[in-house]
Image 1 (cartoon, rainbow, N blue to C red):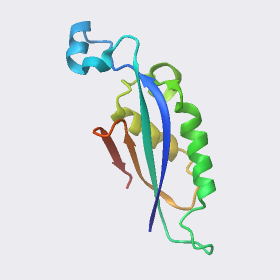
Image 2 (cartoon, helix red, strand yellow):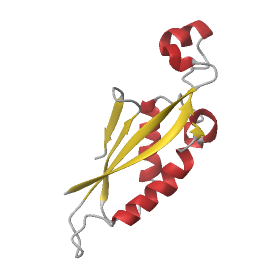
Image 3 (cartoon, helix red, strand yellow):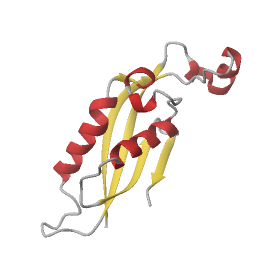
Length: 134
C-alpha cells in the first residue's frame, strides 16, 4: 500500500552554468537565467510504501510530516537554492536537481518502517519531475 503526502515551499533560484558564456546561459535558460534570480511555489509529494501496522496505518502521518519538515521544508522554504542549500551548491538548481537532492536528503538515514517509494516535485503546473525509488 502507498501513502502520498503533499508539502509546499517557496524558494528562489537562478539557472546558470558557470562554464558557459553569458550568451549561452541566456539561450539555454531564457528568463530563468535572470541575474537576480526568480521564485517558485514548489509542491513536493512524498510517497511511502508498506503494509499497515497494528494501528491500520502505513506510517504515522505526524512522523512523516516531521521528517519532511526537518530534512526539507526547514532547509528549502524561503531560501535561495543557489546559496542557501548546501546539497545544491555544486549543481545547477534545476527542478530535476532539486528533486534529486530532496530524494537524497530524505533517503539518508531513513528512520521510518515504511519504505520511501517516490518523490515528485512540481515547479509550475507544467514542470513536474518524479523519481521512483526502487
